[in-house]
Length: 263
Image (cartoon, rainbow, N blue to C red; front, side):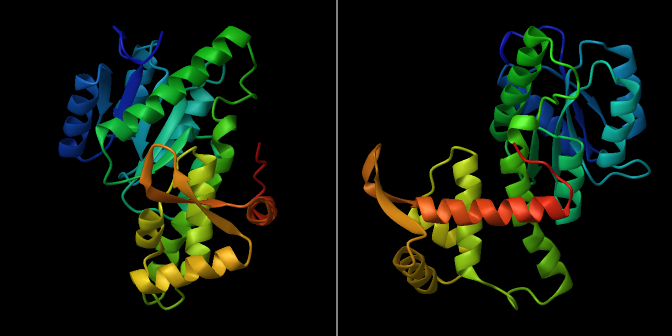
């Protein structure tokens, strides 16, 4: 069974902001995804105990008393034989939180503000993984999120920008070229094309500076420009094989420091 056509809700939304919770629940409902909602971790645990049909949890990280990461830890212990696939959302991205979500093998790590469509996309992947696991009969050690460890870890590295800017003066250590390489790696791991314009915006640098850095990376053989097959007026940017190999070496080395095994 896919996302649409669900009768008994299989998705639990957890957020201490009732307005966000209501808006997201309504938006997902309009997309054919019925949900149950909880404003606290305690209420979420109670709902999980009462409703066996719940398979996916979408939880905010920053909540009073019991935060989202601790909630997932408690759920992992209580539903050891039938673990729930987790999607973590936060309005305050940080490397610490992203790595915490990764250690609990979350399917996705999303940053607010986000749309119901974006969450629905993650839910669809989570349900697909849960159903594949049920069909194959794999043990819980083969966690449903394992195929997403790489893109999620790359998102964790991107989230480190927030840590840096929160501690130091914003822009003090800006490096457009490195930000671009990270964004390209995330886009590739997520199967998402990225245009020259989008890459310039994501770098946080003035457009002229960003374009120069794109030229520098191209001259170094790390990236390439290619026409968008769906829109010839748009130019996409992608990693070259040498660029991909160097990013892979970096990601593997950094993941090892956190004790994270990537697929």
